[in-house]
Length: 123
Image (cartoon, rainbow, N blue to C red; front, side):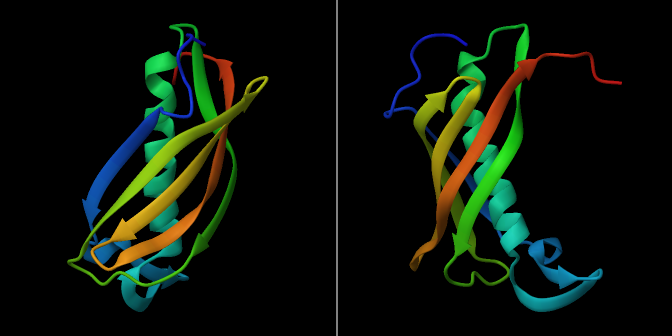
């Protein structure tokens, strides 16, 4: 891991809720709003973007834990964004705080933990 990641290290990803991002169970749409799983996906992406510039060529990071609360809905067609901020590193575990927002305010928050692993060739 390269030196330099600190509490000021932040990443953001922006998106618009598409029809394939709505809440589904068993493959069937349940609500016409952003699914919790899709919100978390964007939070994890922002978290990974925090880490990527600091990885050595021989290492990678994989998801380890997610603890998120989904606080309010975001309808199809509405923009939203996820922000991740480096919180701490405990050995090979890197914890980021994450938050998602839409035009009306916060929609979710929590933490994402990734673990540093040796980079392997992907099949």
